[in-house]
Image (cartoon, helix red, strand yellow):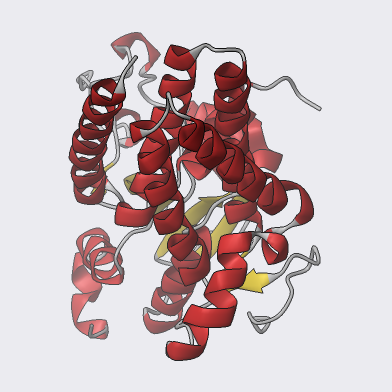
Length: 176
Length: 153
């Protein structure tokens, strides 16, 4: 083992970490549409092929198991028009800033509630919803169905835009 | 909403988030040098020093972490007040994650297993660099996955 080896390892680590960091910066906190099973049952359900979930789990007719688990956890804290559900944990740096952003939005936009759930104390729910990181933010419509989600701290403008998509008729009610 | 300065409900401190970030920059420099000098006595000294730094931060607390002390004494007085404070628990957890890597590296170096030490230092360096350059907190990201697979308490 000589000095050259250390230099090569150093270069490889910095290049690989930079590539990862750039990718992370792009995807972190991005609001995306939620995976298939939360669509309401209207007519025969076409099994939408989510990238991760096997189609066998799709239950037509009834609300999905995920929606039910969430409804139990929220227990009446659903917002009138939409709900922002934030999963947080003790060792989560960006959870604090995320909380502030979501609180500001829920004050600014009428009918929106912000509910924060401690991931560690609700591991059953975390597994049921396949939450892997904190913060994860779920965007629920008025029926409590997950429509969008973001993992990592979302930007405030993205949260507002996502709510705008959820409530198209309410768009003129608020300004960014 | 409770005021978000001073202490949280569990008695943890609220700290300036730029402190841990500054510490991550110093850690990145120290570990990069350690990697270059890993087979020399200077490499051993650097690894031992960084192990001590992480140990103080993780076990005693961030107020005892040398880079944090440098930040508070020399850097923070020259900066504007922070826009917001953060909980001290996540950075302290990150110090503990770093400590695990550095203890492995130190023991390996003392045992003459330079390759193992190189890998351990390289992993700690990657984590510190990601924290310094991208504000990415490896310990925070791993924490929930670990909590999910961990048997119930």
